[in-house]
Length: 283
Image 1 (tube, rainbow, N blue to C red):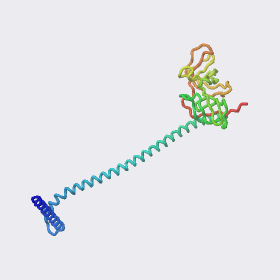
Image 2: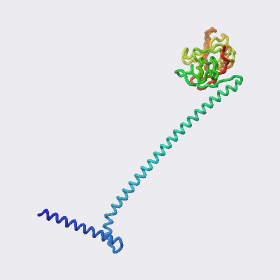
Image 3: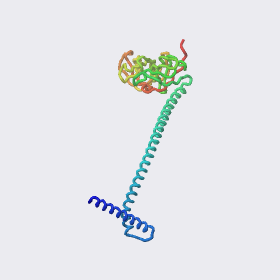
Image 4: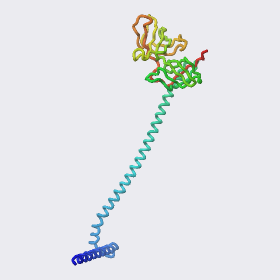
């Protein structure tokens, strides 16, 4: 019985609250339309609604700001990706241009050699392989018999004498450098005109010696810095090719024992392009 009475009271209270709420909404509507003013009601409603409106407005602004930030970040990431790719392309272009410039400089150097010796014909070749190690003692170039390369043909670059053709195939040639221990070149001291034989001594003598000149006359007065050129007496290399300069002189008295250490004209740690002299094919 009490439960039924309690439930009836709740229903009456809910109906009363609903009626009051409807009345307030109706009065507020009349107040808004201007039929009559109820300041206390407007203030009360405003007191309730204003914070809600502020919260909704703040929430909207926050959501919109986050959306704009996400959009901006996405656009920035896209621009960064585009700029990164563009930078990579520019770096590749600069690298290619740098390589082309270096190649052009090498070609100009080789062209200078051909201009100095216009009566000699050359075949330009590029290095395509070399033996392991830091030195170009032997290496392979991309020209062969089909291009006119012959065995024992002298090889040089814009710095000086490189070596000779050791083996040749139809499309390639193997070059034996003058620093190889198997190499020998008839040389002459340009200033004194003293003759000797230049031997490759890489890995044979002192670790920093790549070439020695032996069999010099006992009374020859050599100085460090003297230029050594080919004498042409070995029948392979023509006279006048730059071999290197005198770096040090041994103090041996005997002609067979006396030698000088040469600093080669060519940088045998860095060879990329060479000139091969065109020679007549042997019988």
